[in-house]
Amino acid sequence: MSTIRFEEVGHQFGERVVLSDVSADLRESRVGIIGSNGSGKSTLARMINGLVHPTSGRVIVDDLEPARHGAEVRRKVSFLFSDPDAQIVMPTVGEDIAFSLRRLSLEKTAVAARVESALELVGLPGYADHPAHHLSSGQKQLLAMASILVTEPSILVCDEPTTLLDMRNTRRLAELLSGLSQQIILVTHDLDLIVGYERVLVIADGRLVADGHGAESVAYYRKLMS
Amino acid sequence: MIGVYRAGNSLLHRTPAGAKLLALLVFTTLLLIFRSPTTMGVGLIVVVLAYALAAYTPVVMLQQIWPMKWIVILLFPFQWWIAGWEAAVVVVGTLVLAVAAAGLVSLTTRTTDLLAVIEWAIQPLRYVRVDPERVALLLTLTIRVVPVINDLVHDVRDARRARGMERSVRAYVTPVVIRTVGYAERLGDALVARGVDD
Ligand SMILES: Nc1ncnc2c1ncn2[C@@H]1O[C@H](COP(=O)(O)OP(=O)(O)OP(=O)(O)O)[C@@H](O)[C@H]1O
Ligand SMILES: [Mg+2]
Image (cartoon, rainbow over all chains, first blue to last red; front, side):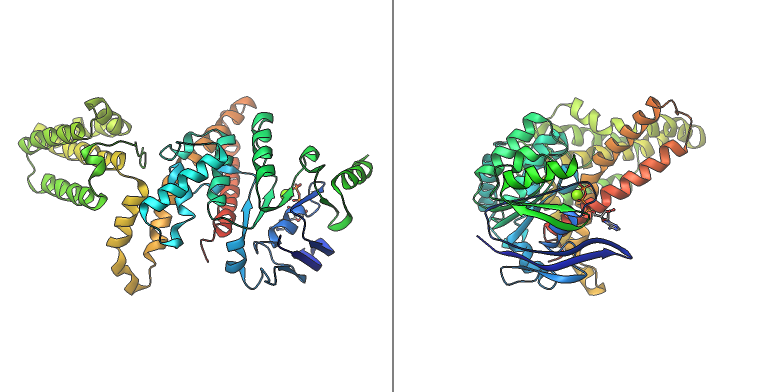
């Protein structure tokens, strides 16, 4: 597993402090992040691949600082967002997955083979020539996942990947996630998804208020909210 | 609709994208040079045959030009009135045939292949510091974003109706703008995360 290290990380948007003094070393293969709306979870997660830079302290992913070596870090760290429509950039399913491989200068047949195996992995075999727009939300999220996994990242950060999905698709995505060999950092409001995780961070008002086993952190969070 | 590639294995599907684009260019140029009703007749036969080569019926061809029905309905009588029936046939015919031919190219060619040709064709723009890959990406995104924005506009229209504010322009424009900007922001984040700038 990789190590994601937060060293006294803080973040301000202008005057507004949204994260302060977060320190944690994440080496577990499954890490959850929970907390109420606006507590700073997304801001924290985005720092892992350099979408947001800390305004104090620093983040280190396997000896690399995302704020300085964004491109290198993003080659290892992929990010799954909530809105599937915003993650798909090509008109057809196969083309969107192939877009992730554009820098590798592979042969056409090699690209097609990798596209198809990514589609099989997420449970959408044979969809390569399907217009992305005609997929259901759940299928779109699976496509977004395929487009990410085809690059074989070592870390997968997911920010509420199931928010827009129904129960069946949530389960499908959860099953897919649990079968992956990657290190996964999952931000979610769905406590069932992370209760079995080795480690769960609880964020409240921009501070890390609990850090422990899934069951432990979830119990703490439930009490905090009641 | 632009960019709606339909998988297939016809002769036209297997023809390289560059050849199809070149043929499209030659075809429309010929229509513009030999401006006569006869040319339009020949052009129509050529287009119908080309659709047949791709194993498409004239119905598919009609679907391609259907979105421009209002332009045709308004333009044809207008042209007839000011310039005579021959001019009307030429003007409207050129338009319809060009759209039908372009539609056939997009039906039989993957967007990525089309863009690769465009990217290659605009390589000289490098000398004026335009990045051809960027331009190609921008074109792709446009094709991809059109149906998303279309859905968003429909959503907003339904929401407005649900609240009984059909007549309010503000209840329409404000949410459309806010949601489009939000979508653009999320799309931007996703592009950065997928390494577009790296
Ligand atoms: N670009 C921005 N500019 C200004 N303020 C921002 C920006 N992004 C987030 N914020 C603010 O930072 C705070 C934390 O936001 P963040 O998105 O990290 O919360 P979150 O825990 O992910 O919430 P949610 O559960 O709603 O997704 C919020 O109060 C939010 O309004
Ligand atoms: Mg969030």
